[in-house]
Amino acid sequence: MRKKFTLVLMVLLSLSLVACSKADSSQAGKEDSDNPMEITYWYSWTDKIQENNENLVKQFNETVGKEKNIVVKAEYQGSYDELHQKLQAAHVAGEVPAVSVMEIASIKTFADNGVIEPLSPYIEKDNIDMGDFYEGLLGNCKVEDVWYGLPYLRSTPILYLNTTLLEKAGLDPTGPKTWDELAEYSKIVKEKTGAYGLSMHSYDWLLEGFMLEHGSSVLSEDETKTNLNSEEGKKVFQFFKDLKDKDYIRFMAGSDSAKLEADYMNQNTAMWMQSTGDITKILEIAKENNFEVNTCFLPKEVDYGVPTGGCNLVMAREISPEEKEAAWEFIKWMVDTEQSAYASAYTGYVPSRKSAAETDKIKTLYKETPQFKVALDQLELYSTGRPMNPAYAEVKKYLTETMDAIWVNGADIDSTLAEFEIKANELLSK
Figure 1: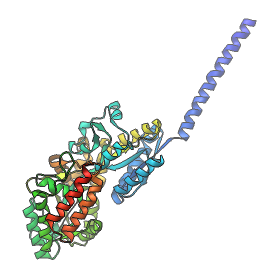
Figure 2 (figure 1 turned 90 degrees about the horizontal axis):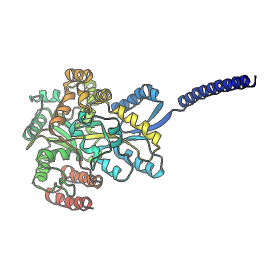
Figure 3 (figure 1 turned 30 degrees about the vertical axis):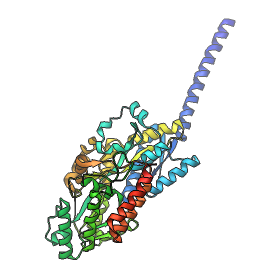
Figure 4 (figure 1 turned 90 degrees about the vertical axis):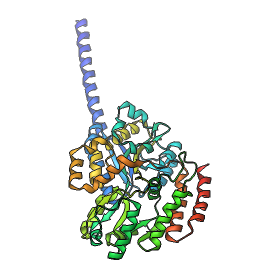
């Protein structure tokens, strides 16, 4: 009897433990579901770009996030520069967002300062096919052979054309192919229509492209000095100064860049150079104001050449291992094929992955609205990265001042570029 009683007790105890185990397991799952891993995502810019970011975050939360119990909270942080400043302050305060966009030229600065997490281990672990990203987009994702960012909303500057004005002036609406044709177009537009042939503002990104088109670059290959005070640099500045002095083009200071939109919206200019990331907005503005828009490559001098721009997605270094895993799931999803295609179609940024360009969404887009495809064609053939010397952020301020001085205020080219060279080289060599 004692043996039988002991055996019954052991069976009952075993069943009780199993029941408790199942209850605990069920409760743990409920608690996980009630307390998901929440991470913050910082992004820049408003309008269609903001809508795209908010839409993608919502899609993630409803799909992969729901499956993996991750909730992403998207927060707008202003321009790239404003976001970078806030990110530096957040790093010092120990309250960083798990994921952030980052303008591509700033990757090295934040990597060197230990703000962002190396992504190479995550890429290797999940066997991400980096060959599926366009090569022209990858230069600013690495620092000393370590991946720190993945291409997200990436762009090139392109030439936008008000074809309504061009046709009124009797010009080919496909646009100028060379700098000589750009000058001729600008002259004829002004004489025939009264509008400016071209409107521009002092913009370092465009100047990088102009130097590439002259077979040079703003900085030397090792990024320790500037090439601007050179024959090529002087040609660039003289070309646009001559057109501005003849009143064929309008030039605005870097701080007045917002006036560019007013110029093309009101049809005060036939051409302007701007990011492909603005194409959706520009096409909507054109429709609302009854004019047609076409796009083409930046006109060439020695050759075509264009810098890439936009942002990569990065992960904060000073977050918990659990947050890093959640952040990686989000980053990985955001740059995947379908999301890359969605973002490109919604905004006008180039699809960052080759597989995205092969989706039905992008193929249909390019067929129905060929203005979108120009940037990708230019990217595949002529693109390069941006300087990543940490001092370049400061150099760009002097660069904008130099463009303002010559193109807006009529300063002497030789002495102004010589002065810029001294300031820039001092900063770059530190």
